Length: 307
Image (cartoon, rainbow, N blue to C red; front, side):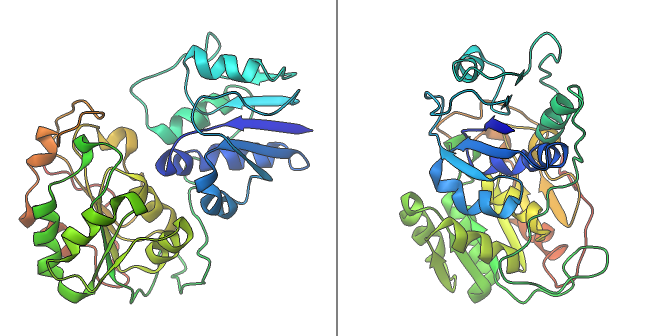
């Protein structure tokens, strides 16, 4: 059996689809599962342990796949994604539509689990964990018992609306001192260096695998509503997450040692400038939240919203 799954989006999008991908694996243990997603995500895809082959697919472009036994649309509900999968001539297609209407007020993890469940494929929405490449000591509860890595500060995000100001990230780094490591993609190298100049021990701008390993062993992560936040969730790494235009009820961590700062305002997540609600979060709030999650073995409430 050949299963084709479309999720041609970013890192956070991929990680919120992990329970759905694992549900497909359990339902079809002998199938070849192909994921159509960007090639740069390959290191993360390898760690999900549910996908046999990554088919490099950058966005909504024609999919180089013919006649799958099952095609699954984990990309969206628009006609473009549906049409691209129909063109592959699948024997069966699972997508949002009349049978499973799209719901806007829903957590992204639940969205895809619900879609598959309505088609007879059960998923566990809590099955988000990734195993680190280098084993780390854990408690019996599954939380990391000891962490002596750095505090990872990731100032970047895909859109300006979700980027907290550089000078505020720099103030946080200044308070943390040499324990801070500032990360970014190669395109964010200038941003990372600007933040790190306030006193971080180093800047890490490298491969996705290096970022995943760093977060897996970090003492804590500070970032906005971006893919690194979902990496922290996947590895159980304590985090302080800064939300602005999007509600954490839709994209935030479901459980674990995480603090979410959000002032209850939503806006345009694709805007170029920082969201007004995001700008309401202060440096003092972030440092206070960090004090609640950053020590080894600490477990904080799943969500502590600042309203």
